[in-house]
Image 1 (cartoon, rainbow, N blue to C red):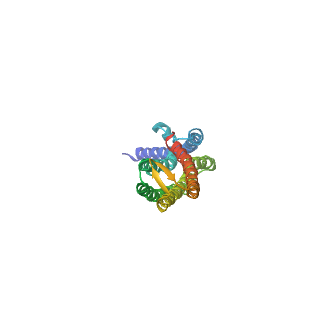
Image 2: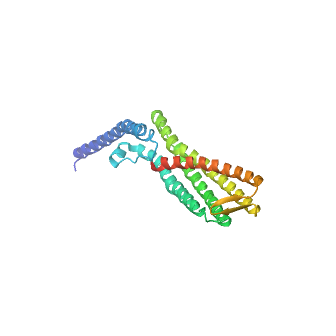
Image 3: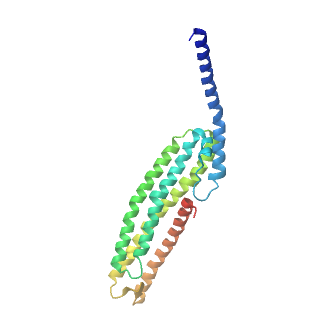
Length: 237
């Protein structure tokens, strides 16, 4: 290769590299706008499961695609590690509390449910911490940050708030159930469970029992509303 031809090749390569750099810079506003538009139209308004863009759509986000993954990964972890196990526990507990179950069986099921909730809460805290750490490390243009944080609030922080309320509330309700079962055991002769119904033989015991059951019923209703909302957010149901 002569010197003149080599110089042309080097110059062409340098020009090509420059053009790539310029082109790369020029795509950033388009990628950012595509991502902002996706967040505003497809993610922020959604009140159910997160959309997963097809490869061609995701490619338009360019360098910003991994930023959406932070939200999606938290959502996936919540579904697989939190929501599904909670659903399973709830079904198992409901089955264990069938009418023919005696006090001991109900107490054992209640303790099992309560003990299983603590590790799930710890897993959620860990997944939330990972997401929040990744979000805090992002450096975003102001227009993108505004839309992105709205998406984070809707699909990370609001579900997290529901879980952080729901799990402790469920534990509190289960503790109330244990108190109720202990009260029934301590009131042997006055209270018994027969054919799934609690039967009471004196008015003072009945009044106390009704108050305890009333508290549990209110707590269970509030927890069920939270659970339904979490399920809707996660699965779109």
